Length: 281
Image (tube, rainbow, N blue to C red):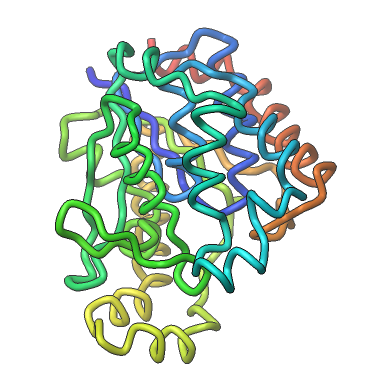
């Protein structure tokens, strides 16, 4: 039996995932492998480095720091989240990411990004926690419109959620047959077409495959949710969803709101931590 963890993205809804995973780490819950998408990648990596509390700590500390995220950064660099600060200075100096623990951990950690030329998902195994791994996590979280395309390893990459928002099928293809899925939308949520498609069609007019992926993202997402529901009924998948709508903005700058969503994740996780342990036993 291979035990896996799948972490959906959702920008600052990722504070919910951070609350859940912190409770898991604090209670000694381990997995053979994990995969994160977008926020699920850049926040979820702290599971492999065994750093509970890091995600909520640095986001609350720097959420109002213009070096971290600002319209000025978007205008001047093309990235809402400043690459030099958020992905270099912060993890190496200000709130260090424990690359040594990350690389020594036996847990496999994967991220997914979208190749804008083919429109297909690209999966990458992060095993060192070095600058290359961090670049792949950054690519996974490269939100169209708000982030420049990340050119890496011969690919032109954007948000992993475009092609595979909840990569349960990929993890299952690797032999993971006992999986926990952390979603960031409550039960009953149905994704609708992207309201920014007119702008996205103009911005990515040279990449018709990517436009096609974006146009059908909501359909793929809803199909995946139905598949996850089926797997949950079969008993080999444990699903954790917010017990209430999170109602938080993609670039939330109120640290009280970040803490609120984080605490919802903790509360929901504490209620089922025993069930998760039994499921994975």
